[in-house]
Image 1 (cartoon, rainbow, N blue to C red):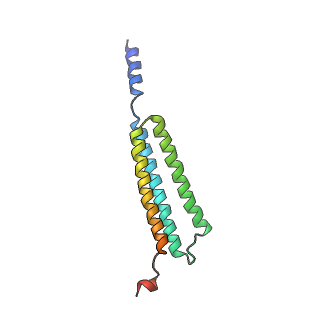
Image 2: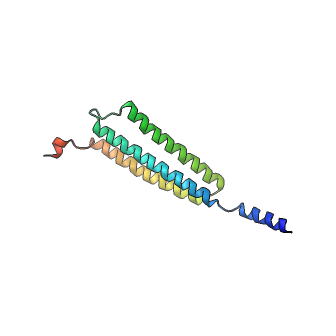
Amino acid sequence: MHALVLMAADAAAGDDVNLWGALGCAVAYSASLLATLDAFADLILARGDSPAGRLTPGLGLKFGSKLAAAAIAVVSAAIVLALDGNWFAFTTLTAAFVVVVGIGVIVLLRYSRVGGAPSPAKAGG
């Protein structure tokens, strides 16, 4: 009888959402978000420091590797959340990631359209 109760408890617990897994995925999403925004900041700073406004191969590799790592982490975390059936965490984390990265892209595009930071000679008057 005791074994039957334990099996029923295990079956009922299997339907619950894995909160530790959701927490780990939230950490992966936030780390990916920070890596993406850091890559955008690197791009803005590198374009402001470069006379031609272009990236050197090393900075391009750094920028691309941050974005690739962020994409791998977000897709992996999204798959884990979907397989776990935690649709609330999947939806909210993905929406937050897309919104913040979208804002970052808008800032990046606005910065590139303006032409970068003003030079010290222009800023001084």
